[in-house]
Structure formats: C-alpha cells, structure tokens
Length: 170
Image (cartoon, rainbow, N blue to C red; front, side):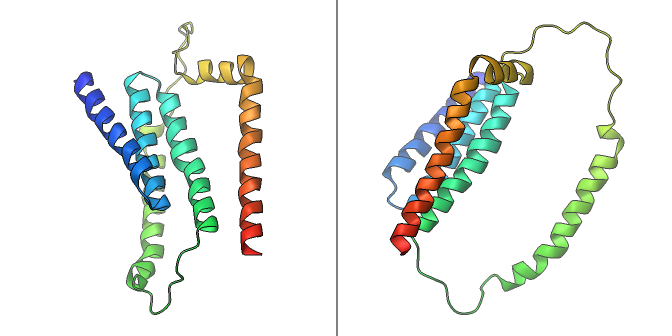
C-alpha cells in the first residue's frame, strides 16, 4: 500500500513541478508550487517524519507561499476590479458561518477526546528520526548557524522585494 501511495504522490509531484515551470501566469505557478510542497509533506509522512511533514505544510506551503504570492501581487499588479461585488451573498454568510465554526472547534476541544493522559513512568527511548526532539536538537545544536543564516536570507529577500516594489511604484 505504501508503494502505491508513494508512486501516486510522486506522479503528482512531478506533474506539479512541470506545471510550476511551464505556466506563464506566476499565480498559477505559485499554486503548483503549493501542490508540490504538499507532496513533499506526504513523502515525509511516508518516511515516518510527522513533525517535518507538519513543518513543511505550516512553514513552506503556508507562510513562505503567502510571502511569494504577496511579492507576485506587488510586483505584477493586475487589473483593478470595478462594479458590483459578485460574491456579496457569500461574504454576508462568512461571519455567521465563521462563528459557527469557532463554536464547533470549542466544543471539540472541550470534549473528553482531548483530555491529557497521565504521564507514563516508562523510560524514554531514543527519539524518532523525524520527531520533535531530534529535529529540535539538530536545529538548535549542530545546525544553529545555517538555521539563523536562512532566517537572515529570508528577511533580506523580503526587504529586497519591498525595495523593488517601491522603486517600481515610484
């Protein structure tokens, strides 16, 4: 079963990578990149690295892609929309449905499913290869300097995008 899932995800990853490279519209390319990053997260899951899969989705498919789409929207402005709002009825339903969703989340979190189990007295074994402890130990130990350099590079890229956008707009 794992082989079948692997090959299916691999095909989707290759197709999305090709779509990323071959699409002329940068927003479509960014969406193909999100699909590709999601495929990488599934591959991490297949390897048993749940934390890395979660970090892949939250950091790359979430935060970094928002930054990319923001940069694309700033650097390549589209045609402004005018006229009546075609989604007005949907927007009016958004607030009550959002409140209902928050209420349901509150009910789920207060249910007995999320009650913490008492801690076990068993000795802790070696940390899993993709577990939080091993990743944290590597990121904040052996690879602290490259981790911090990456954060500085991302900050420099953000400042560069804003500088380019300001120069183009002015």
